[in-house]
Image 1 (cartoon, rainbow, N blue to C red):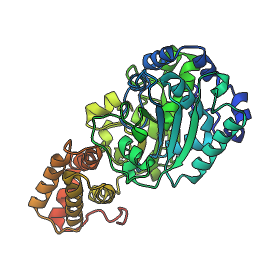
Image 2: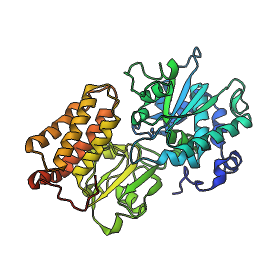
Image 3: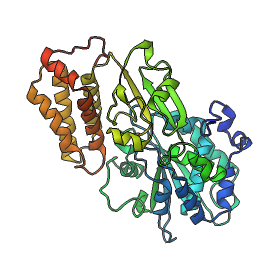
Image 4: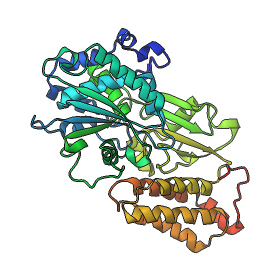
Length: 424
């Protein structure tokens, strides 16, 4: 079945307004503008589009939370922070298909009555920022944005591209809002939720880059067309970013529900003919899968049954040479350094987990240390303002669940028993 999101990626003209329109761009927007905002929200709801930023929340339902009154300006915030290690799909979309994203944002603004949209992009993504800024400038130059957007009287939309300062927690929607407002990127307590009190205190909807990029196709080609791809609960395609020990790392647009074995096949399989040891299916924060789960369909409803999640679709592959204690040490180092420090369970828990992983990896730990490493993540999970502590706990729990033998071998041999593994 033909891809749609990435069909024209690689064609440089697709990044220009003229090239995008020549490929049929803005057909979805024209159909959206011919309908009422309420009808557009219902179409997105009926499509079953789930957010592609990690949580997988129903997009149309989220759009329906925006207040219907016109008392205050409404805002859309587009999450292009993408700081999850192993995830790099949004960068590709912003660089290769900027007008797909902008068309989706404009449709969203029409549906939700928003007058302003901020695209918050990870600061390191300088090319993506330049590409989006150039695309926005082209739309303003053709008077497609601002007052009477796309010639519709009373529909006034401004779009701002904002460069992030570079912190993992700014990918969390309320941490992102704090950063957007010029403050330290720290998550907010909820409620109030962004739909009531979001960016600058205004009603706000936050969606991810890829989520908006799917919307024009749904409006143009219809709900049934969109639902003909993917699974019943997770329709459409997504861009799987495959990295690690594979022959051809890269991005692959595939229907949700594609078996993991097939996803790895598109990347050429495990590098050098080695055996597979484990796969993190949705970025660094997702629990690892063992080789026995290669047939699992890559959609949230199936992965959650296996104790993990789709996350951002960043598939991280590890071959038989990898020491899973070293993986745990790297994971815990990352989350210890990226914790914003607001919540004790997260601030202290991530530090303890890292210390224990280091001790085990160096062969200096006891059975009591391994028991403590099993307990600490349980005390972090679900105990903090945001899901960061969960994200730090889950991969450690997954590694212990499936590869406890690696941890016990370090205790028994008092050294790392995997000489071919990567260096710390």
